[in-house]
Length: 300
Image (cartoon, rainbow, N blue to C red):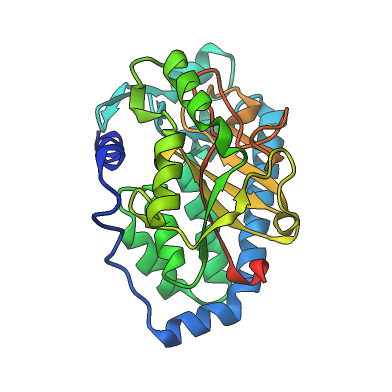
């Protein structure tokens, strides 16, 4: 699987050696983007809310999710294998649970990074920057969240390292190893090693970090600027998980949950260490540090 393979490469890669390259924007493109960034991010935030409400409405009406995880399910009657992953057909599940199989036509595939792409696309197009979005989207064919963040950084967004309590890094790493000794899909956080690299060289894997202070050591009291920010793109565990931050909330899509789960898409306060905060943990995946790329005007 390309995605998992690239994550494994990133984990062992010496981040002092290189950072992401390959996408650039002119001064004029950046200036145009900045002139529209407030409207763009508000529209992207509206997309998050509309998509979430569509999810809830569909689920309440039909008892099944509108947005199915594209790392677990596929449309049709037959099992399919994609990127080394066995995908379960949706129609037999609907039939066996007494759900109209024709509803499949209204269902859409989704993953954490695709949710980001969906709403960024809407934001860019709403302000007439379709060409910029097409350039970004073609830069992330592997759908790696950290690469998407870098593309936004190239337009002037700021890359923030987030870690609510670095003094716990070693404890968190031990916890990760105890939960998943074999580290399936490379979901471990490597919190201590990546924090040390951020402090030492200003890089997180292939990403240059602009700010390693504003979102560090906040405990369970996130910075106030997040509550007024319409849209930011977050990653955790080396890009394994992608989430959005909007007006202080973490909004997430998940690609492996049940067709009948209300939490395929979910909202929670961005507060990783707080009870009920997000990005939300699972039994095997705990998100405690990573990157967040934000519009620069909210850091003033």
